[in-house]
Length: 133
Image 1 (spheres, helix red, strand yellow):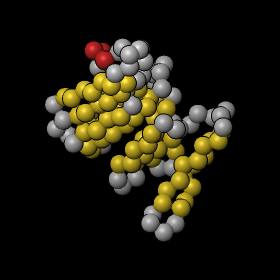
Image 2: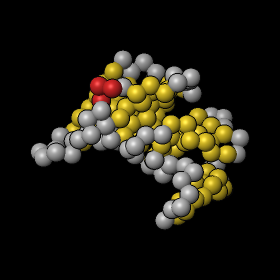
Image 3: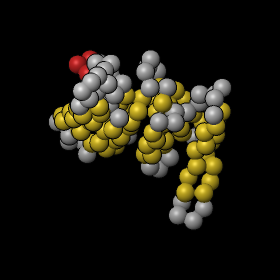
């Protein structure tokens, strides 16, 4: 398994990084760009790319599926039974959303409210939508 992370500036595609299955230096589930030069990627943890290198900034047992932000100090990351928020200093895990039978795939925030969405894994499946202010 080979992953490539590239950037398109409107005219040219430039490779930022690549990895194989033996190296987990960035996540491949979702990516978030915070201008001018910060990238976050999620997968088996949360990774931050800045100044030409990746650092794992949060590690969890489950895969992180989605990430969104309204600013560099208001980031949400979601996954199977996990909802996280970064306030610019610390990652906070919301303990009321730890049901392993729900995979939160997507999140959206404008800085005033957040929407989080994902399906249940049990039959009959349902879509869960969380809304917070």
